[in-house]
Image (cartoon, rainbow, N blue to C red; front, top):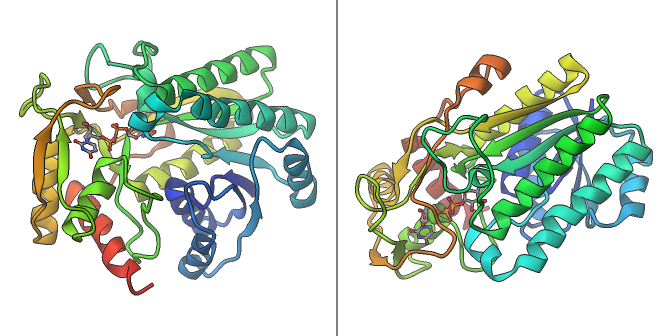
Length: 336
Ligand code: WQD
C-alpha cells in the first residue's frame, strides 16, 4: 500500500516512515523542511535499506498535492505536518492556525477529488485542555484549550468529524499523542529542533551535552506530587508503531472515524524526568526553578485502554529507554 506521509522527515514522521517500510508499505514523503532536514531521508533509507520518495513543498500547495496523488498512486495519508510548540504557539497564533488548519483543508479537498479517503491524523492530548481528571479517556471533555497549538488540533478534529458526518465513506483515525520523546536505537534519527528547543527532553539533552547552560523548570507550584508539571512521556518508536496499527484498522474497517490516545498511561513530573535522565545516562543536568510557562497545564496522562482493546497496541518501552535513546542520538549525531 502506498502511503503519503506529510511532515515525514520530522521527528515523529521519520520514525513512522521507518515502521511503515519495515511493515512492507511504500512511502512517499511531502515535507517543507520548516522543522526537519532533508538528510533525514537518507537516514531512514539507511536504517531500513528501502527507498522513499521525497517531495519538497508545502501542503498549502494544492497543485503539488494533486500532482503527488496522480504520479504516486497514493492510497492513504498520514498527516504529521504541523507546528507543535505549545509555548511558541501562544506568541504566533496566525502562523499556527494557517499552518496547522488551512493546510489540512487543502489536503482534504485534494483527497476528496482523488477519491482517497483513508487518513491517519496526528492530533494531540492538548485538545483536552486542562483535563477534568486523569488518566484521560477519549470520551472525556475536549476544548478549553489553553494555547493556539492545542486549539488548532481541536479545530481539525472538528473538521474531520463534520467531514465524516457529511460522507460516511471516509476512513479516519485521529491519534491523540501525549509527549513523544526518545529516538531510534541506531542513533540516526531523533528530535533535533531548529534553534532553542521548546520541549523538555531536547532541552535536557542539550544541557547534558553542554550545548546549553541550564534547564529552567517552568514552575514548581502546580498541584502535583512535587509541584512540577506531570506528562505522559511515550517513546517515539512506540508512537510510530501505533500508526501502523491505526492503518491496519482503517484497512480492515474500510470506513469510520476512530479516536485513540497514544500514551503509556503513566505520568512523570519534570523532576522525575531529570532524575531518570541523569540515572540512565550517568550525567548531571543543571537546572533552576523558574516561573510557569503561559499555556501550560499541571497534569496530563492517558487512559490507554481503548487503543489496547481496539488496535491491539500498547507502549512497550520505558522511561530509561526514552532517556538513553534521546541522549544516544545527540552523542551519535556528532559522528553521523
Ligand atoms: C513538558 C513539561 C513544561 C520545557 C508537548 C508538545 C505538544 C504536544 C503535547 C504532541 C511541561 C516543562 C518544558 C522546559 C520545562 N505533543 N518544561 N522546561 O508542553 O506538554 O507539549 O506535548 O502533540 O506538541 O509540545 O511538552 O516538553 O514543552 O513540556 O520545565 O524548558 O516540561 O512546563 O510541564 P508539552 P513540553
